Amino acid sequence: MIVDLEPVTRDNWRAVAALTVHAGQRDFVADVEHYLCMCAYGELWHALAVTLEGQVVGFCMWAVDDDRSRWIGGVVVDAARQRQGIGRALIKALRDKLAAEPGTPNVALSYQPSNTAARALYLSLGFVETGEEDDGEVVARWTPTVPVVPTR
Ligand SMILES: CC(C)(COP(=O)(O)OP(=O)(O)OC[C@H]1O[C@@H](n2cnc3c(N)ncnc32)[C@H](O)[C@@H]1OP(=O)(O)O)[C@@H](O)C(=O)NCCC(=O)NCCS
Image 1 (cartoon, rainbow, N blue to C red):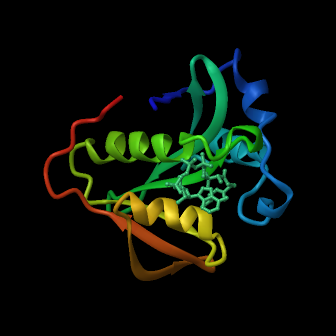
Image 2: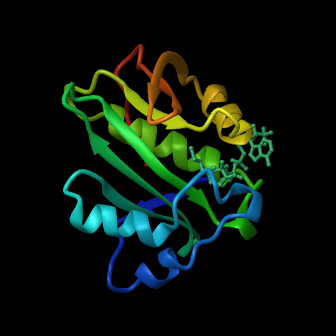
């Protein structure tokens, strides 16, 4: 599966803001509207719409840390589109895109210890738990062993 990571624009922001997760997942992430505000006003995070065949199916955002590691955050696949391989495709695409930026030591993300679905996804893509903790969340990092060429 190939997903596209696109800017959030005047044309797609409504579809992005309308993304929802299942009731049991609401504690794992903030509302996408909140993430959009963080990206618009917080001067750290950058928003991306995840599209499949032109339709918005998810959201994610990225940031650069002081040590130049890149962070992935706010990962949401719309409840109606989960378990179809979109999460795997989007993490892989964003991971490779960020890792390919010159001077990037690793790509980091974090998740709540109880978020077993996210944990399984990230570990299966080679992210390694480092023992760090960020705001009560487990930190995992992916370090490229060879130069990365982004797939998308
Ligand atoms: C986590 C999330 C992004 C995964 O997206 P997705 O499109 O459903 O994931 P995929 O279909 O690509 O599945 C990838 C892997 O994730 C894991 N996974 C996804 N959903 C799962 C579930 N409900 N239960 C257990 N494992 C699950 C599996 O390891 C799966 O691999 P497999 O299909 O080979 O078993 C999605 O469930 C989501 O948006 N959750 C709510 C928000 C959230 O928790 N975001 C992450 C914050 S750190």
